[in-house]
Length: 168
Image (cartoon, rainbow, N blue to C red; front, top):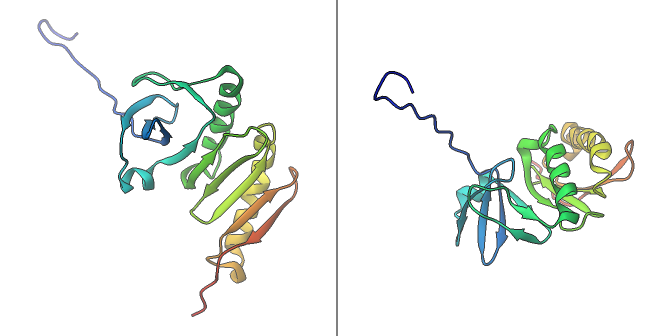
């Protein structure tokens, strides 16, 4: 309160950071996995701006609360998302697939599919993934080419080109 008869309200609007599919519709989620809304259809604008999140079984969801996964999966899912969110790739993530904790994948920049390994490997394999993407993007022979990045160890990855280079 400030002054008698005056009430100040501070409202913070959360923007959808992720979306996931459930019950024939879509749940819009904040970056901390708070449920923002449930929609039966999702327009292309949301799909372009938010990251598609593929999760293991969802136990419950309620607008205003954090999404609830089963106890076995929630810990690794939240840890992987936190690691990816803090990475240099954060703004270019398109899809994150966390359905199998021993086969975590994500796509970024609409060009790269990354097979990063198990949930335990994400943090240590992420730097080599970032280096691989930077190397590919700075190679004049691979300009505009997408592909699959296989993170093998914390020091090595392989790149399998899957796109077609346009020659001017």
